[in-house]
Image (tube, rainbow, N blue to C red; front, side):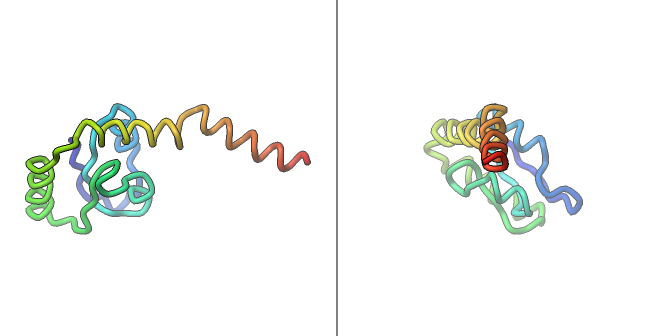
Amino acid sequence: MLVMGYSPTESLRTSILEWMASGTRVYATAVSGTCDVIIPGETGYLVGTAESTEMAEQALSVVQSDSEGSALSERCRGLIEQRLSLEAARGRYRSILDTAVS
């Protein structure tokens, strides 16, 4: 599990996407962008605070009670492949071009 702290200048860190693509569960603060890819309990976990003690306690609780870690890891990778892969981007561009040409 990757635990990402709060960053006031970065809404969606590239490293979060990279870790998810490798099937790593992510635990991060709920900032814009991050909330678009981390679905709580499905592809990772979100915390609403940047308080380090509270984040540490919640992350430890998640690790200790996480009974379906491998399924969540697979969903992380699946979400990245479905939404953010080269093939997915190509399909979106093709759709835009087809609409523009029609």
